[in-house]
Length: 104
Image (cartoon, rainbow, N blue to C red; front, side):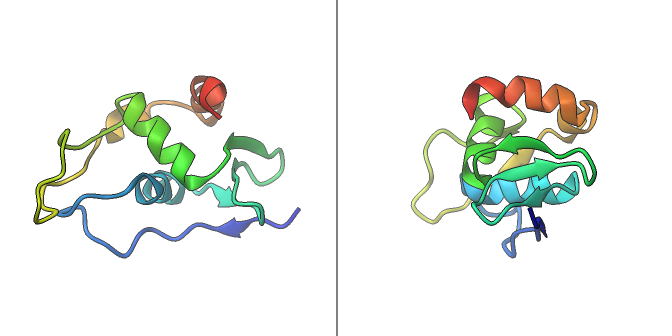
């Protein structure tokens, strides 16, 4: 299985990020890779499936409180997405996989 590197989103955090973009930010920061079917994997030798897609990863991050944004989007799309890097960085890939296991 060939995995490709995940690039960060081109948009700034000063604007709302979609679930897919939140997943892209997390996956890029943790050096996870994407399979041809869109699923996200951690590890280069022993590959661990983290999420079914970047969108699922982002939605799980918001649901678990690793990322937050205002409840309703303002009409001008302003309002930053806030990433809880301390929560994300403090966990190993195995811990994150265990937490995401029920949501994939």
